Image (cartoon, rainbow, N blue to C red; front, side):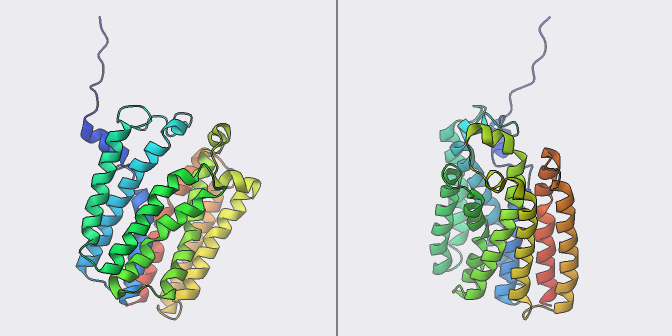
Length: 290
């Protein structure tokens, strides 16, 4: 008697897996600082048009970035437990097909940007360039998470450009602060795969930092919160911001407890929960500007 085999997944289900549709934490990490910057730039609610552009654009560009990343890393991912079954790596989706999906998503995001202003459109090209560079930085840069930090923080100056048609110093400072948050959560992510990355020769912040990884991650969180607090203290209600800080710092302590033993499970859980810290800061900005 021939054993029943499960049906092959549809192209749609493979594409959804390719863009990590069932794992929204990735685009939420991009979304919260971008929305917070929109609110700061506008001094309150930025309007439904810009809100829709940045929410949809964030989801589309993160999805396109996943396509590029999986193509760039397809040979490395075969040797990493967590990524070996990704659609491109497993051969279920071809590299050309993945790049075509990514191109369609990026063009859709660009269509949204075209509804804003000239400066935002010009900045979108820089954002795209950084998105394309990051997957290859892992081969040459000892802390590629810093490159990802620029990519994942670029929504901050773009938000100011969309609202004010300029990018003031405030926007760049907030972007630098957000970069430290990306360093924190993506180092946690890199800690999950450290053993595999060492074996295949991949460069990550978790490898570069070595045994200093846990204190470094904690420090990155604190620098992020310190920069945003110093920058926005005169803009937001200090009592609201102070309450937000208590909640945010409690999460930092929680993350420390999750990663201090450097287990795969603890580090991955810490990474996945980072969007709550971003949401906390976003709520602090929104309520602090009322």
